[in-house]
Image (cartoon, rainbow, N blue to C red; front, side):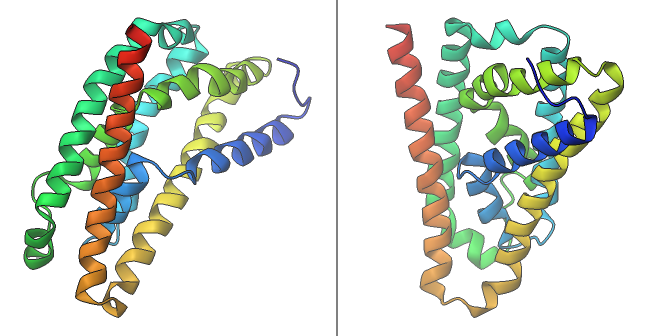
Length: 209
């Protein structure tokens, strides 16, 4: 990959592309919105869970294992298992939204776990890293191993900043919302997870056909 000759310019490019991907709505975003209702630090915890999956993946691709995540069978397996998990999480969120609002806490799983699960269950997350992400990492390889920690730092910082902004905003403004809007928040978050879960399942089955 022909890229910028300056490592600083390259890292700035990584930050820009990372932000454009981070702000896209998806399962992680839905979990951050839901968890942020009761925990101002939920975004940081979710970003940490996300990083637990993402950093080993970045390392694997850096050292040449990106082809594994382009394999249709691997993609389908992640999609079927991950889609099923997201459907369950979405259904549980919708079903339990009244209890969560009353108890002021979702005890089924914490924000960190939600970050791990919503990341690991998304086949398109792995596909993004095997394509767009792999192209970025190829650019990092040109600067040698020394750039890798900075690459990871820039990308994960984008995740932490965005997820914290979302959960902080939800937590600080929840007192201004009506009861109906509170219920709508959890309903919408659950529906988003359901939609992505069904989409991951269906696209994975189609790929296997």
